[in-house]
Length: 244
Figure 1 (tube, helix red, strand yellow):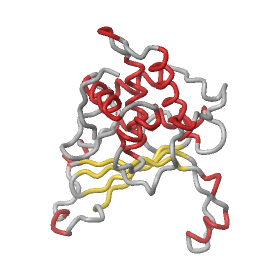
Figure 2 (cartoon, one colour; figure 1 turned 180 degrees about the vertical axis):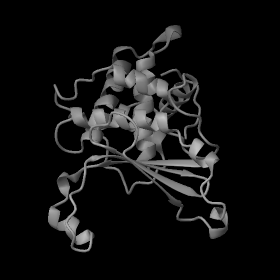
Figure 3 (cartoon, one colour; figure 1 turned 30 degrees about the horizontal axis):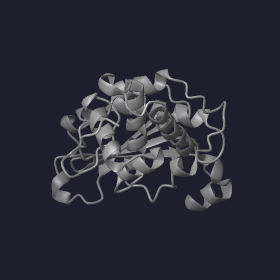
């Protein structure tokens, strides 16, 4: 069983005094970057990339998960556990997150990037409400996957509803978009009864290949597309019948 939590680490809001206070009086300068927590079996694996993500993580920590009993870790960390870490995919995803943040200006940059993507989805639907047999582009469904993934990873219990509200569409249309995104290998398969918002390498390649111009135009979305602030982080879809 695996679960994933992502965090964008920003030292801008932490003063040296606060950092020193948290570290027993020893001043330690926080570092910007991306942090991902992955639970594999009884182990919690924390990986951290610096702000300039160019490859694998610069830090990797493995420790028993909070809910793990001591019996479950008696064998220690095994080779199977290490092989189960999807390092290539997580590194690519960290790079995509870092790129989105660096392109945005001010405020919650990642949330602004998601608002911009949701607005692009809504604009395409307004311009072409009935795509017919040709369907919508892979780029469209990659955007759907990215916005849905953000709501899943931000801890929302109803990511499909949040996606629908952000794009100003019906719930069943948004649910069908998510289903089609999975069929197009843009979202990893969901575990039964649990949300699954992990982007695939194919989705990340598409998102990385497109410049959304976040740094060149305002990212203030209409009211219907505003992404609400995420709740406390923690890291389903239901199929629909409409193409949207």
